[in-house]
Length: 274
Image 1 (cartoon, rainbow, N blue to C red):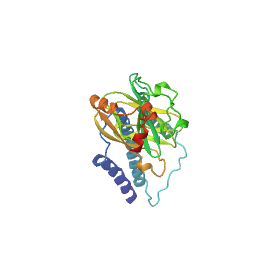
Image 2: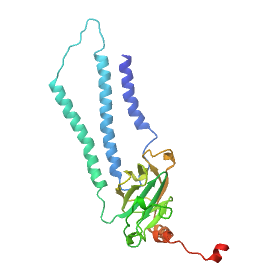
Image 3: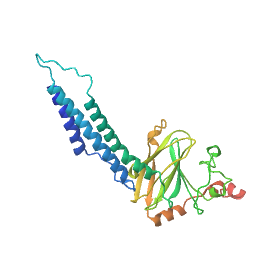
Image 4: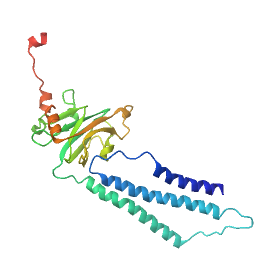
């Protein structure tokens, strides 16, 4: 009897904890409300199953508790029950997977007008690269990384000369414009994650992964690494700032291109003495 009561309290307490919990998602700041909906659908399905199973266990503990003179009936098979459970399980799994597959299809189908932004992760900082006036990013290679080329941009590719390099500082994006995030890691596994954008993806050394989103709210949003990447993992943070179009253009004009960083201003011997 006591065990049955404990099981009932676990089921009721779990529901109340959810309904009264002060913890919830951060306010969304992108177009991916679909992801929230998918998570909610999954939560309600798994929550219903959890409550149903726990209450059924409580019923069984109470209904079939030990009684003097009673004997349990041995029934090794029950095809009707097995068919019913298999069908119900298959339906529940399909109900959880179907919305996720639909959203995943949208998640990796990038709009034609999306601007490409490269995210480079390394222990333990974030750097970024934006296309210049030609509207396209140049090629890159980790083997070309050096003190004067921290992102490994190919100096022989003309398309990379006007690329805007943002090293270990804030990334700015314009509001209302779709962005394709190209994710590249220099060293180990990382994961680019901004909770308000509901978008994240692993960054695998040697390959380029991607996702896209459209910022829908101006403000500053923290970048986290959602993959354990070493002793400094917890400090691998950054800031994404979503600007109005005017503020974004003003910020962009203040940034340096790869060509400018590769050919620093020359100073005379007189200036060096001074």
